[in-house]
Amino acid sequence: MTDHRVDTTARLAQWRIDTLASSSTYRKSDPFKIGKWNWRLVVEKNRNLLIKLYPEISSLNKESPPIASFIIQVVCSLGGRKTFVHPEIRDKQLKSNGDFVWAIEVPLGGKFIIDVEFLDLKTLSPNGSESCSVWTEHFTHKDFQATTLSSIGKMLSESIHTDIIINTSNGSVGAHRAILAARSPVFKSMFSHDLKEKEMSVINISDMSIEACQAFLSYIYGNIIDQHFLTHRLELLRAADKYDVTDLKEACHESLLDDIDTNNVLERLQNASLYRLPKLKICCMQYLVRFGKIFDILEEFTGFIQSADRELIGEVFNEVLSVWKGF
Image 1 (cartoon, rainbow, N blue to C red):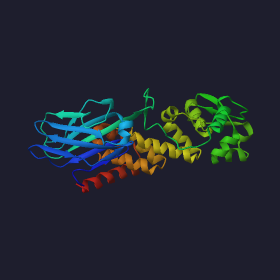
Image 2 (cartoon, one colour):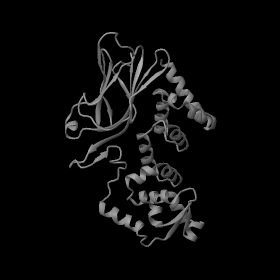
Image 3 (cartoon, rainbow, N blue to C red):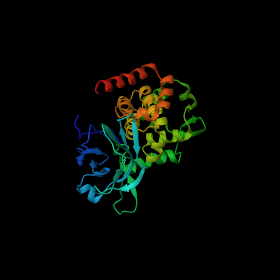
Image 4 (cartoon, helix red, strand yellow):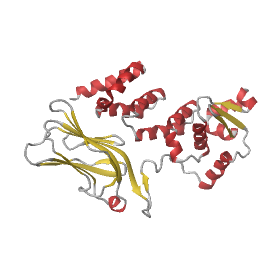
């Protein structure tokens, strides 16, 4: 590990600095990629400690500079763990190395970590009228013909010749056996054998709300919108696993990797274990242990240890031991 390398996950960057000279110092990190951009961190030490964050100059920056929302903090290990947190930055356009400068007046010595957690990254639309998050532009990778998708979606939204009723925990919605069977081997089995779903033309999904079920069906029919997908990701993940809709399960898996934070990391770690999502499990454990976020949620982590699966807890502690051996 060099003093210039920045470790990253999908939205988190950490720069570990072993020491700074007592006199004037200038140090620039290696480039690191978050979103569409390569970024740099800079530390300048003179009277104060200055920290700068900016995207590298490129044609992309000139045409569409990032509009960033992020939390930046410095964690110092000298004399006990001390954390200096800058007020949250919201929707700040960053073009050059002077657009974000943080002056820390407290002298820092010994090893310290600069921690940047990106909450969102946006770009302006071509006409400059509105901004769009780079993390919700393409959450699925479908390339169906628009007219076909529109027609199939209309079959659902207008209940055109529906032949099956789905009962949820708080309502019912109509659907089409053929489409459900084509997208899910579980549904296909239901309708191919003499099960009650075939005889009664009813499917009971009591562990799902009607709103989540409508999002599930919209995905199956190819016309789900971004916000509904993001709102119901965990219920969609459960349904995708239960009904063996593998592409939806993978879409949920990839999406859940994008916005891990201290509020959701423990829940996502448990879901990663429950639904066999290896990349999500690894990212959650790295976020907690390697990036030190476990210190920010010690109380919640204590509750997690008391209630979580023993095997999963063992994996977390193996990760802790592995990181400790590296120091």
